[in-house]
Length: 136
Image (tube, rainbow, N blue to C red; front, side, top):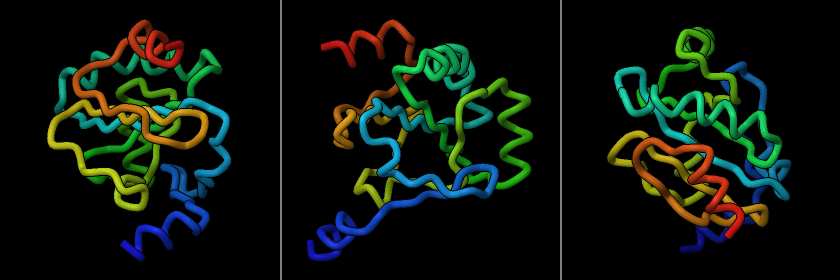
């Protein structure tokens, strides 16, 4: 319990696919989708265009996390081949944020502008579904 409290006091930073750091606090004020995906997951492939549209909309920041722990240039190349245009993290932020590792894919963690986990969704997401959720 003490570790969780201390973790909340530290500034969270996560490595992005390109090796740079993303300060979690810099996302405050935005809806954030942390989407877990894998190359072999057909529903993951189906939702990529929807997630690209959401990220481009400016109302949501989408961050992809590769479930198979692909990193570095291999992750960048894989993302490019799969058509991923949104940001990708080179590490799983879940443990540091107190999230359970998803047991099914795709899994999308929806974080509100205050930085709170609003909902975890499984299965492919659509721009329409996410837009309805954030406009509730």
